[in-house]
Amino acid sequence: MGNSLNCVNCHLDAGRLADSAPLWGAYGMYPAYRAKTKNVDTIENRMQGCFMYSMNGKAPAVDAPEMKALVVYMYWMATGAPVGKNLPGRIYPVLKNPPRAPSWEAGQLVFEKNCQICHGKNGEGQYTNGQAVFPPLWGEKSYNWGAGMHRVNTAAGFIKANMPLSQGGQLSDQDAWDVAYYINSQVRPKDPRQTATIEEAVKKFHEENCNYGKEIHGTKLGL
Image (tube, rainbow, N blue to C red; front, side, top):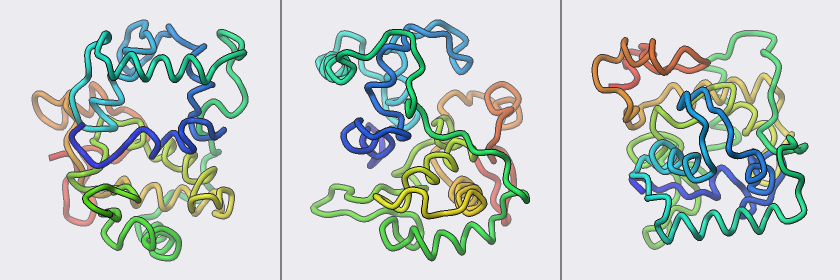
């Protein structure tokens, strides 16, 4: 792992919480074709991606003890769940496009009012004895530009359902879009898939709802 995040930061309540990408909803859906990899991925492949992007680290081998432990846990969590059925609550909610385009300035206000008390004024998170008790949302210790959460729509759905922590549904859809846009308009580790220019990486990997490669408030994101 190359940052301060853990699986539970996106898969809340030890991977049990609906609308927070619960593990019981994922196991029975693999193997599956993924547009991101342009391949049929196993559950091990899927988690390798989490280590590379969400954790900004290195993917463990499919037979590594850590990988085996994660797969066993997911298998146990999915006990009794049907195979190949997209269960309610499996993914983050998909929000409709907001009434107006997401705004950096509006998102900053939402962040200051609702988020910075836990995640810090500069999105740096909070730590106790060197361990993150509230994860950093941007900067070198957060997820990189290849993580699914860097997409504004993905982050907005997660935020709407789950944030502030244990108070999901408190924010309006517009607020969720705005603060997701604000968070994903900040500097974070580069996409490890980028081997040439940002422009080439944008065309190959980022024709999606994200700010990768854009210049916002004088900073070009992705460098």
